[in-house]
Structure formats: C-alpha cells, structure tokens
Length: 279
Image (tube, rainbow, N blue to C red; front, side):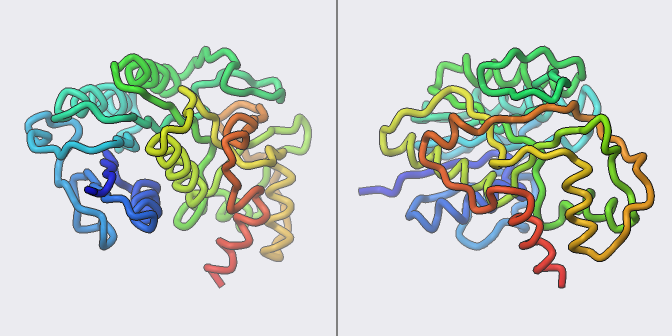
C-alpha cells in the first residue's frame, strides 16, 4: 500500500513542525516554500512561490493539503497575495482533488472586544483589513469544492517568538484595569492540532468546517506579564503597554471534543519550556 501523503503549502515554522509530526506517524510529506534549504530532513521539498502560478506547474497529487502560508508583507496587498491569491493559485494547480483541505487562519476574524467568550459560532465582523481578508480566504477554502476545514489560531508563541518576553524583560506590562484578555497557543500545539485533525480526516472520522485553536486558559495580559516577571526576576515599572487585538476569551471546547490534548495547556507550561531552553 502506498503511504498516505500530505502537501504543506507555505511550510514555515509551524509547517515544518507539522511535517515532522506527520512523518513520525508514517506519512509522506511534501513541503512547499520558496527556499527549501531550510526544510528539515524527511520533508520532501518543492521550491515554488504561491504568488507565481507558473512555479506551481508540477505539484504532486496528495491525500491532504494544508495551506499554512504567512504574509511576508503586512499590508492589504501582501495579505491578499498570501491568503486569497495564493490559495486560489494553489487550488488551480493541484493535479487531483485531495480528500481534505486545511486552511490555517486567525482569531483576528473576530471583532469582539467585550472580554466575553467567543467560539466557532460567534459572529465575525472584523474591522481591520487583515481580518477581512482572512475571512475572505476562509470562505474561498470552504467553498472550494474540496472538503475543507479552517483552523483559527490565536496568538502563537514559542521558540523565536519572544515579543512578550522581551517586553517584560524591559519592565513593561499592560494595565491591570481594564483587563485585556489574551489568548495563545504554543507553536508545537499548532502543529499538534493540525496533525490531529489530518489524522482524523485520513481515518474517516468527522472533521468540522471550523475549529478555534487556543489553549485552555485565556488570561488577562497583565497577569501573564506578572507571572513572567516573577520567573525572570524583573520588576514591572511601566504599565503603558498596548496591544492591537481586542479583549476576548477564545473557547477550545469544539477542538477538545475531538480528543486533542494540549502539550502546553496554559501559558505557564509553555513559557516554562521556552525559559528552560533559554537558560
């Protein structure tokens, strides 16, 4: 029997971790990116540019496609190219219809700012161009004619993603009142969630059209910063830090119901692992 196969389009940090995870489960994995020299051993590289249809002329037929591209330019044109146009180019170039398409999205599609819970059924009326374009790309995936699932990740942290750590090291934190609720997911759990859902699709288990992927514990940003300050042995002296995202609590109940167990169920476990690596 031939191996079941997965194409990861936009095989960056999360995509590489996903690929290694899937290989460990016996799958054949292709990683598409412009520079394939950075791919880990075992992932079969496809040197191509999602913005250039001509470069996508010789894609392999695979059972699963994971679209995990990230915008390299953070303006409206860059977002459209990375998410809407890139997805369209890829779908047009596929030599055969896969069993399932996964599209990695963002909780930025939610507009809520009242510190209440949101889930997959909550309204999505983003006011930012990034949220609007991501929502447009989600609909393109779901209406592609291929069985599709959108995974909305919250704030991704992990190795090399040290913005909050650096902020706390400098003594900065968010205001205690009004509390700004934040949501996060470790890079390894992003890969874990996708691998879990891919395995469900390949084994014929039900996979919903949308999952909100966030850890078990939404938390006020000032509490996370205070905990990190204690771990780092620094004092918070400036509480003027702001953030672009609104204040909401993201529910992972639907994802949890599929049987996924988080490697890092809260920021404490995740940041402890990061700090241990930095020591």
